[in-house]
Length: 195
Ligand code: OGA
Ligand code: MN
Image (cartoon, rainbow, N blue to C red):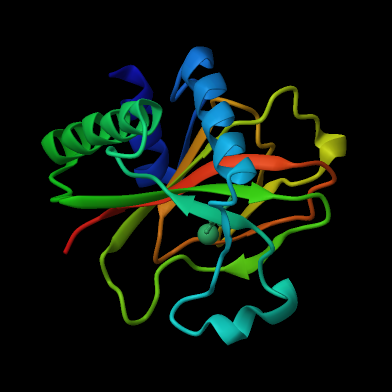
């Protein structure tokens, strides 16, 4: 699986990796349609922050709406989660990462929303080892905003949320933020876990 080894080299040598074709364009389109269907059915809920949801009142920290993926929900969610499982097997075989779980949600940022600088790993939950974000947007350009900025010790990396692209980094080390999106921004975000 060449895409995975590329990402692993990135994560070990520079704290993050990016995988240009983590999922193919058909699966990107199917996942995008599934996300929009969840939105239309009212299944997407405003995201909270850790265990204290009052902290995010008026969406001061993050403005996305989320829906957790489950293999039982829909075949396309199952297809994505199976892709994640094959990445986990690869990581465990090649890097002895001992990963034994995961959790992923769809995320929809309506125009004007953002996610301020943060770390993904809660103090009370040490299970999150790697963060993995996969974008579902069609024809995204830098003018659309919504970039992911990774704050690494010696540089900032800017990622444009182009459909099919995945980004991968250590959950407890890399602070990051999503700058304001000027159009609807669609993604899957989640964590590879070790409990
Ligand atoms: C997150 C997050 C980044 C992105 O959901 O925790 O940081 O690019 N997402 O969507
Ligand atoms: Mn995050």
